[in-house]
Length: 113
Image 1 (tube, rainbow, N blue to C red):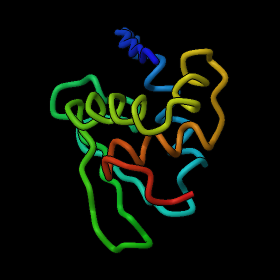
Image 2 (image 1 turned 180 degrees about the vertical axis):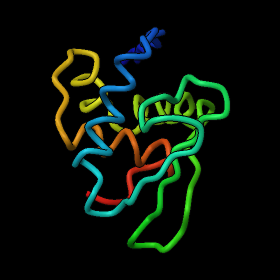
Image 3 (image 1 turned 180 degrees about the horizontal axis):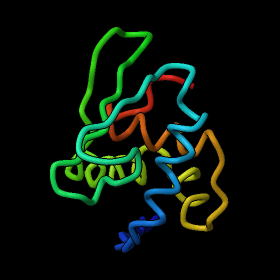
């Protein structure tokens, strides 16, 4: 039996990723995370010197989310959670979508939920 793999490249606009972060910061991830920023507002990740500080209330560790972590997180999100990533592509996001995206950015996997 033949097996076929298809890899697609998706280009995401800043606003689309900001929408995911808004969903995570404003509710989707509040059950496990606390947030603070350096170099801008919560959603200014494309500005020089920006960092979103994420405190994992469950694990007690602090993480820094910058542009590099967000870019890597999107790739992990697409691979580890394809159904939720498809919701993101279809602009059908909710708190779970945003939360799983943030976890992929912070942990490289989905830890909670």
